[in-house]
Length: 183
Image (tube, rainbow, N blue to C red; front, side, top):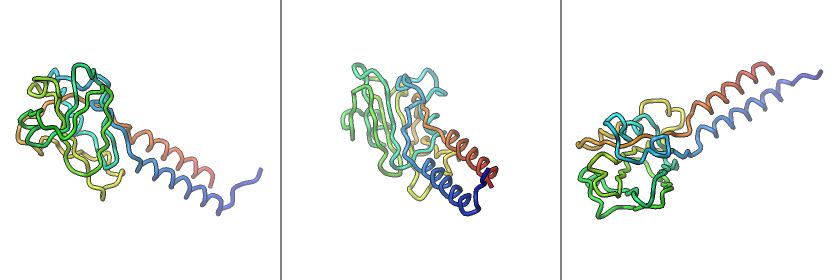
């Protein structure tokens, strides 16, 4: 049985590293709260969406995806001031389709509140902090910036699941181990 030459093994290694790099830098869709029913008044402070956001890394190009009942609620993107005061009268963007996807186009904080009357005051709100473009996906497992640091008022909201780095990392490590056996 013919073996691989060192130049073909090198080519395979470079190709595998390229695909591994691509998997770490692609934009991701983050389901807000990690589940489809997360956009709601939190049952407790520990059920806050900001707790989820603190544990999740967001990069420019990533998207937030909300699943909710568009007949009874809405997602409003607002200013920091409107986030703190729960002002729904002047949103930057308003969505009530029940299946909202917002692309995070720039680094920095984004503020979201519920459009349903009284829900924001009861904690249905979210701050997402997008890392600067100079950061890479290799820092995804580090602690995320705390949305609570952005605002001096208590912020309570529900939770989300991002497409994780663990799957890509597992595939990448598996490919590297496989490559070692080829050499």
